[in-house]
Every structure is written in structure tokens, then in C-alpha cells.
Image 1 (spheres, rainbow, N blue to C red):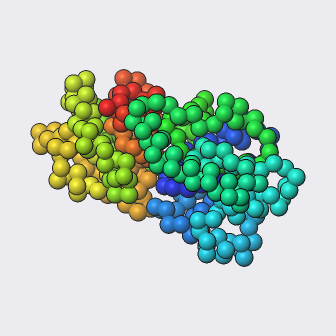
Image 2 (cartoon, helix red, strand yellow):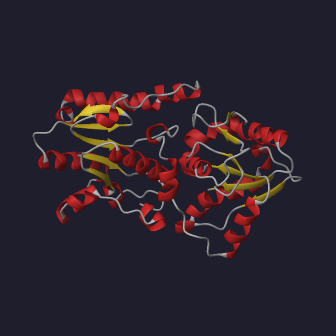
Image 3 (cartoon, rainbow, N blue to C red):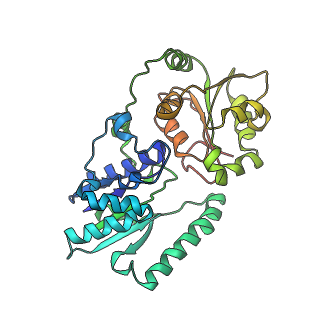
Length: 325
């Protein structure tokens, strides 16, 4: 049995689902997603793959009783442990392991002092060491080469990517899976067609809850360098700015490498449950300047433009993307 925890916002869910599909396609074991984390933990708009894309996947949450669901709500941070306990009950003789940010652990060690120390060490490594590796532009191997053939029961939690490495070769399938609903409103209909006919450039500015990593992009001049690169390589670029703090962007054009002489559109009408429309619009843009955000990565990855495309990404993130600054 293989279970992939679903967590985070839309972009993270799409990464995890793509990883789940790769596991499922290369494994004879039962494979599930696990949406239990959304029962209590308030993450953006909750689990979105079903209502946006109509995705139906076997959900490990369906095995929980009403009492267990209530316990999950009362102790929201324990969803991984709840899931592993149930996996162990269903197959007590099978080895059970888990991956936490790509780090392997054994269920049998979970309650031990040594197990707790290992998890603490992984947390320190994630917060300190991994960050330095990213900034040095080095690739991090999260799983062993034969991870698709690993036997036993496995719970995958908080899987974060820096490329399509763990679902490479599945792009056409993912384009089908992540098929956005048609635009129904005038704003999105009009501007999406405009984007297709010009040198449109999507700029994603992630602030708000992700300033702990995206904050460095402003001090390093990432957006200035990216916009300068775009302007030096294409004629008459039209910029479309997407952000969770769109008013900040309007007031700080210089921080983004833009000025009042540029043709700029601030996309500010897709909100709440319609926020995913921003990602959809990004796929219509010919060029992409992406943030440290899986949301904008998918806007690039699912792009309708394949040729003569400029993609800019922060140095140390999103490997195998065109230009890093």
C-alpha cells in the first residue's frame, strides 16, 4: 500500500498528485491520496483538485471512522501518525516506512527516543542545510533511484519538488488531468485571447505567507534582472502581474523592474475559490517570470506556448527551467 498525503495550496496539491500518479503507474500495490490533513488545518482554499479539475482518486481518508475523523480534527498535526497507525492495523506483518520531506523513517522507530531525535534532526536540516544547498544551486536527491520499486507500505508526506523529476515523462497525461474549466466571465475570456496574440509575460509575485523565502528575491534584484533579460530579448513585451499583494505591486513598480512606460496589466479580479484562474491565465502567456512558488511553476509547465519561450526562475530553485537570476 502506498499513500501520498495531500497538503498545501493548489500548486502543492498538483505536485503531490503528479507524484501519486507516477507511483500508481509504476507499482502494483494499492495507491491512495490522503486528504485528511484538510479536515482541520486551514490551508488556502482547502483541497481543490476535485472541484477544479474533477479529479477522483482513491482517498485513504475514506477508511477512517467518524470517531477517528473527530480525533484528527482535535489533533490536526497528527494526521501522519493516524494514517500510519491505520496502515499498520490493515497490514501488521508488512514493513511500514514513511518519507518526511524526502527523508526516510521507519514506523517501528516512530515512538522511540531515537526516532524523535531523527525527526528533530531532519527539521533542523530542512530549515538550515537545505536552504544553503538551494542557494548554491545544487540539486537535492530526495529519493533513492529505485524508489518506484520499493516494497512494503509507505506513507509519503510533505513532498516538495524543484522540478518535474519525479513525474518526468508524464507531461501529456498531466495536461489532460489538469484541464481547467472554460472561462465564463468577460474579463478572463478577453484577456486570455489577448495574451495568445502578443509577447505576453506573466510575472508572479508571491508575498504574504511566503515572504520567508520569496523575500530574498527583492533584495537580490531577481525581478529587475528577469525583466531586463526579457526586454533585451523580445520586442514590445506586455507584462501581466499576478500576486497575493497586488496593491503592493502597483505601488512598487521599480522593485519589479517595471516603469510607467511599460504596458502592464494587474490581474486582480480572480479571488477566493476563483483564485485558480490566475494560474490558468499564466498558461496563456508566452513567457513566464516565476517566483518561489509551485503555483507559478505550474503556470509555466502547463503553458500553451512551446517554442521561443523565455522562462526566468530564482537561482537555486526550479531546476531545468531556462534562465536563473
